Length: 160
Image (cartoon, rainbow, N blue to C red; front, side, top):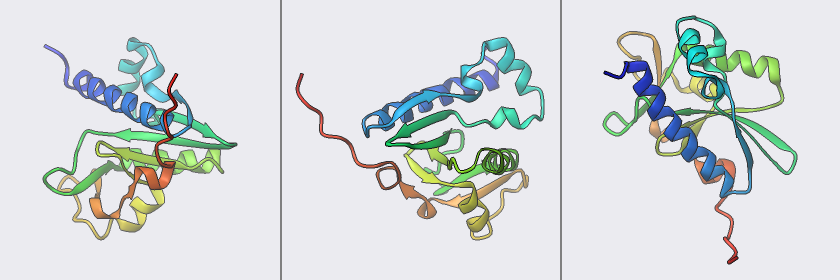
């Protein structure tokens, strides 16, 4: 039987690949980053710690001199609740990333390609109902930005 963390990892990797492809279609040069780039044994060991390294962004992207970091999020889709969940640990790590690596912005990209930032999660978290466990900040889906608005529209594909 596949462990739950491995199942989440597998789903997360598929979403990261989707986001990488969508960024590429918009002219961004992209590379995977974070836990997904580590060997299995290191990912597993890191998952047992409380280190902020567990939440390092999944993707780094550059276009026309701009560099961005992206944390792809799929685990708690907003299909029924119309809210996204960001763990407190993830948000704290994201704010730490921004402090250490400024001026590189950090974006959270959800399964439906809705986009938000750590600052927006902080600003909007009081509008959404808190998760009963208190471990997650919930942000209403209507508070996110369309992917194309943040990362640009699809580039016209040229025939080869």
